[in-house]
Length: 144
View 1 (spheres, rainbow, N blue to C red):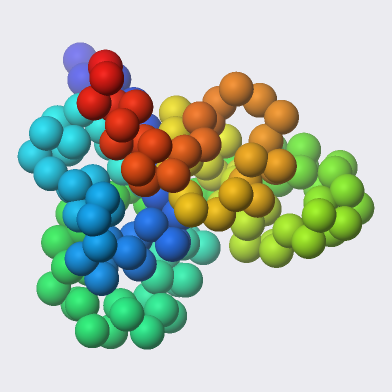
View 2: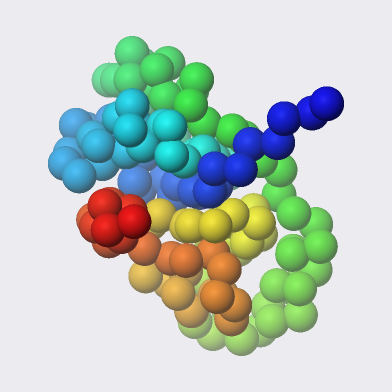
């Protein structure tokens, strides 16, 4: 029998992971034992490439290696991309970068999107994912 992991899935945006690499708090708490027991963390190939291109990543290869074990790499969701493409003109007027759209297609499958980029709140017209900053996410999960 297949054991399906019921922990909520948290998509981490590039800016959150860069702050983690820098040792910033609260990002440094994301991969604590307690958090890893309660949540699954994910990125997509867009975030992976942005992270590898970030100057900070080259300085923190040890941390990159560590988090690699905790991150699921999810594909870009073609069905979600088709839905976003119908809103392309509207999104272009909001100055949304194509990477943000590709990140959103994957994050749409997750329970949470943790980001410091407020543009994502304009992209989603659904209750899921819950879009929070790192601080908001940590405060939210401490209460539950």
